[in-house]
Image (cartoon, rainbow, N blue to C red):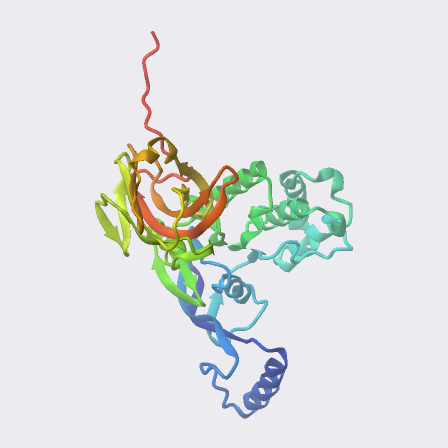
Length: 400
């Protein structure tokens, strides 16, 4: 049960940004390959590494999560694992049958029916017609598309293609299962059904799972690789730590001035009471007071504006706004400066990294004066790992 099913050694793949140059390099590589002096580890002009020096082993019963932002190299690595493209350097060894869900509808013949595609995919996985006959009813039932199973796949919706693709890949119980972002297309009920099936087959299968949904990754993965620009910048079994680094990537960006009319500029913003810092990001315990200090420099003479301080969660979704209006008399305004502190007692945001956007406006129409994104990031610490943005203080009471 502990046998290594996937072994990847120093895998690298490069691409060229320009089509004509790429074709010319292809001709040169073909000629140099015939002479036996091809150098696969040197970049030429306009080339870049899509995947560089990736190594890992995956055993039966393990699930490897591949995470990273768009363009990190995840899909390229999956296509190499599935044999769709060849690496420029390194070695891949896979034992047993491989099932893959890399792209929506990949592996389906659009003019054939769903039933016919089940037989085709089963044959590609190495199953005999008899073995497919024994499983086809389970596949159709799992996909929940029985009334459409004899209709051409080209007429299927994206959700129906996902249902059929996952049903074939999972019900055939391959030794290695490769899943790209496709589960994001399915409805919630089917996604939960898929994860239940993954739990069932995982002890007998090695899974490579790619997703931008960190709750999904943390749910099933016991190994993880965080990729950036083709390289593994974090690798190991500390899934939570890799996810924190993934979210920190959002916080690494410099403050982004979206709009300014030249009336004022932000000089300083800081969390007044951090308990510490992680990678330069201030930390705060769940349940502690949340206090921010703001300092602006006035470039023009203006009336006291309105301040919208918006909190964004780990996945850059706006989740809350701090109400400053009721105590606006406490804002200090001089000829050249505006300063204030804003306090929220007993912060109950769940564990994770958050960021703050700022909108300064005036008048009833809220005409913008200044809009800044990502002016400050902070981390809430707690022993409980959850994904909803709020962990609300609560208690169980006896019924009398």
